[in-house]
Length: 247
Image 1 (cartoon, rainbow, N blue to C red):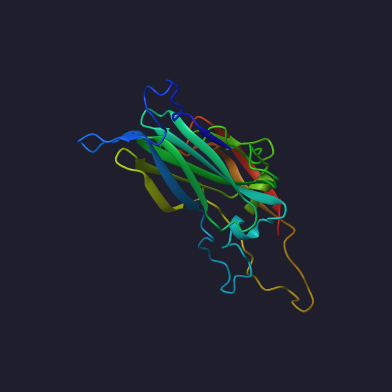
Image 2: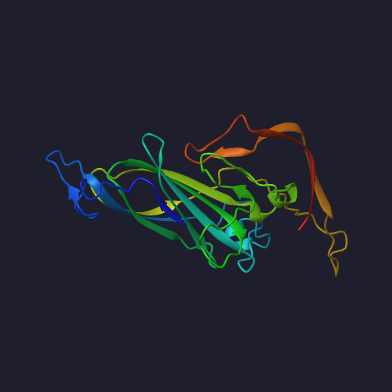
């Protein structure tokens, strides 16, 4: 999905003789349109206290633990000008190697912008046009929230992994190519790893059936503004006892 909302100049050629034309005044500040190309990706793993042999796999996160035959990794880019007006948006889909990066390329008016990125997992799709939200509502990256499908069981799994970044880029002087924009998790993640010795380790697969955490009515934010990198304080929910099956 690609939308360029500010580069549609509809004055019959009176503003610019060509969409590629740019005026360059003496001050060195460009007018017209310029090109940008930007590459972004997610970390392939996170730091953890898992066993040295990596058997717990918790340090790998969704990039390695989510089944690519069932899910795709969706990148969403929204570009805002200094007046907080949406100038451009596009979606890219990664189907197999979730650790691979994606590239966005387009043409914008020569202005200063904030590039806002979000990446989450969605049900595997056969095309890239308007892929449906799964666990996060992303109609506006300034107000990302959980969907009705996002249960506590989902939040206790790697499928709930999501990533974001925002980058200010000045396109008033020239076209730009930007690489190595890394998206990071906007939330903390707590993992419980059992390291105790089994009572009868020979031929036994003993493990806890479930784990419970009591948050005692804590208020937890349910919306996130990827443009500012902050949670939306007005949108919260109370969480008490959470029980989930051990893997």
